[in-house]
Length: 321
Image 1 (cartoon, rainbow, N blue to C red):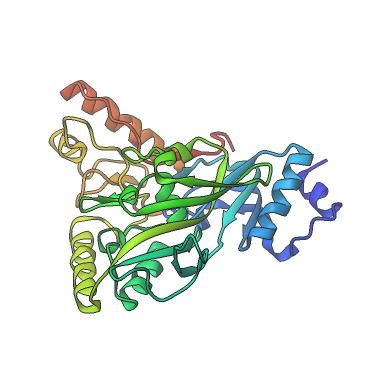
Image 2: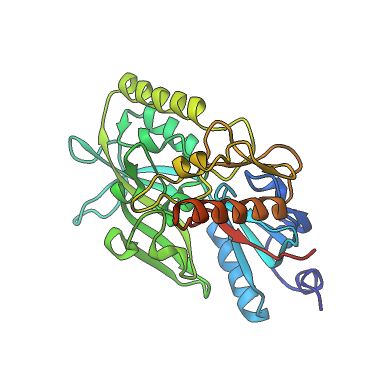
C-alpha cells in the first residue's frame, strides 16, 4: 500500500491540505533544486508532529526533517517516505526562577534576557524582533538564512559568533514522540555540527541567553553585517550558503580561487565569481550538476594543494529519478 493510501485510509488527525504528494522539493530549498518528496507534510504545531510521529512509527515509514531548506541539497530522485517541513514558529521572553518557574516577563535580571524561540522561526524574523525589543547579542547571526532549529543543529556562525555562544538549552522530541530537554553542554557543539545532527531528535524550541542593548546600536550592527553579506556573498543567486567547511589550516574559498575555479560551471551550477566558497544555481541547475561540480572542485584542490575539502551542506534524497 502506498503512503498516500495509508494516510487516506487512516484516522490521522492532521488537516489534509497540509499533506502534499510528489511535491517538488526545489520549492522548499534555497538551492532551488531537488526531485519530489513522496509525501510532504507541513508541521506548524507540536500536536501534529506527535501525531505524525506515532503514525510513522506504527507504519514503519522513514521520515526526513526539513526546516527552511537553506543548508541542504535534495537530489534529483527526490525523497522517499514522509518529509516533515517544520514550521512551528513563535518568540517568547522568559524569566528563569526556581521559586516561580518559567513565566512571560519583559526582563530577566537587569542585563540578561532568556528567550524561547520555536524551531521553525526564521532567523531574519527573530533578529528584527530582538532589535525592536532592544535585546543584543544576536546581531552577527541575524543575516544567516534558515530557521533557528537548523542553525542550532549545524552550529551556524558568522562574524566570529556561533549558536553555541548563545544557546542555553533545546527542547526536542524523538521519533517515538518523547520530549527531551538538552543543555548546551549535552549538545556538544563543534565547528558546523553538533550531537543533534545525527541523532533522531527533532528540535521544538530553543532557549537563548542574550543581553540588554540599545535599539539604534543593534540595528546599526545588523545593517553592517547585512551590507557585508550583500557585498561579499552571491545572495542574488540560489545557493545553500557556504558549500564547504573551512579547513583546520587553510581558507577553503582561497584555495578554490587560487585553483582558478571561480566562474567554472557544470550545467547551470557555477563556482561564484563573487565568493569561491559558494556553488550557485545560475538557473535551472540540477542537483546532479551541483554534485558533479562539487566533486570536481574537491579533485582539483586536492591535486593542486593536497587538501581535502569537506561539505558543509547536507545531501539528502535519491540519486535516480
